[in-house]
Length: 383
Ligand SMILES: Cc1cc2nc3c(=O)[nH]c(=O)nc-3n(C[C@H](O)[C@H](O)[C@H](O)COP(=O)(O)OP(=O)(O)OC[C@H]3O[C@@H](n4cnc5c(N)ncnc54)[C@H](O)[C@@H]3O)c2cc1C
Image (cartoon, rainbow, N blue to C red; front, side, top):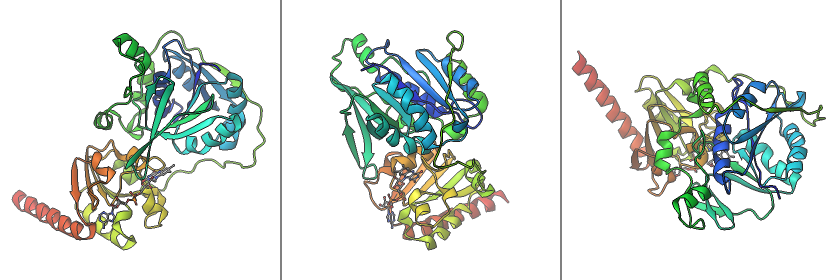
């Protein structure tokens, strides 16, 4: 078996490496048994030369850009067809993929093609003598499941935001050796939850200029990305391209206050309560968990989270949201999180600045009345 670790990177809409790719590279570096283990970045797409060159400037990685007409729009079929033979030839130890909409789509099929293990939605890992032990949340974040791969190669999908992007420190095993500590001891390699929440800027809020300078900040010699072309891949589906989201969806990105609905609101009829609360703030918008959008209580453009929007308002009011990792991935960059939930054990309280254990339908009218009174008092004082 090759000791190599492969990262499947992505290009953001503006043509720069997607921030999740930098998280994946940092993750891959920490998985190495020692700093000499190579990391290979595969970047599929078209017109990706600039992004590949930017990634090649990162120390300790070799980059292969994979270009082809069939890769112009994302398609699980095309990505699997293009990547599988290249990966089979390298036989890597780990293949790191982002657990975003694309990664969650193609990674399991890729693992099947390669006869590899597939471990999805990984949030953290620790190193044991036999190798990494990965962990992921189950039961809406109330329990952690630990998993080890039993195959030579493992496709691992990493939850966006779970790992600090940028250049990773030396691998956990290197660090343990330097410290003189036993490498078989458990070692947390991810940042503590609280630090992560403050430290990771939401990907959607990063400007083009910032992205460029982050990559250039790691400049180490001339860029040297290898570029290969893949022939046309016959596909069973044809992506028609991307459509812009309706204007209303833009409100969420610009909102300073987001009142977000979870399944705990009980039904579509109670959305009105959230609208009334939001109307008391300027630049406020309504958001939702996936459960609410799946139930049809709000359209899916309101969805916040891993497969929805990433937001970072000044105030995020989570109403009846359990706090599944996939939801947190889209809102944990909020400056202040207020969570209302009747379950004192709800996972959302782990990231909340203010925790309210209450029945929503009785608490929200009281909160609305109190906010209204406060506003009227402030207006009175201003006269
Ligand atoms: C690949 C993948 C991607 C996903 N992407 C997303 C995503 O982008 N965004 C997202 O949100 N989810 C996403 N999910 C789903 C996610 O795992 C959760 O299922 C979802 O977030 C749960 O939504 P919820 O918190 O509203 O509902 P639940 O988990 O059902 O939680 C409801 C909460 O309301 C509380 N509650 C119930 N009644 C009341 C009451 N009367 N008063 C007060 N509190 C009450 C309960 O205690 C509970 O904590 C994804 C899942 C997968 C597998």
